[in-house]
Image (cartoon, rainbow, N blue to C red; front, side, top):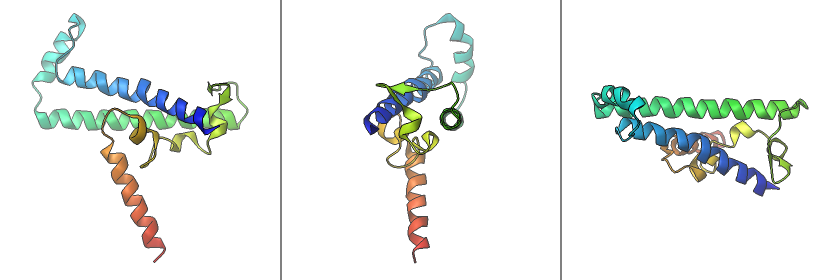
Amino acid sequence: MKNELEKFGSFFVRNLRDRMLYDLDMLLSSKWKTPELEGLQQSVSKFSVNDKEVIREVVDRVITSGMHDLLFALQEESDAGGSIRVFADGQEVAQLSDGLHGEIFGDDGWIVRYSEYPADREKERSQWAQKEIENLGE
């Protein structure tokens, strides 16, 4: 049953988070050829490397927050018997998890395992949490 949850997680990360970060990277590096983005790309090209790194960090955090909130809402909807459900291979993914919104985080979370983009912040947060848990046992 967990296979369906993992299939959804991989799909979710690749088609939401990675697609958005790819679009952002294309914009920050002025690689889009579409005329609608020429002005925006010209404006962005004036930003320093540090400014672009800050923009990427902000966007990454907003995307992760949005992913969390959507997964939380799907979990709540399922738990309440609502009409919005997501299925993978015939299995309702919210029923396969004790909290969909937590599946994206941690060393073994979906972002770390399935994203094409570095998830150093997630790894650092997981390592910090692990140290805190170890310190509680002392």
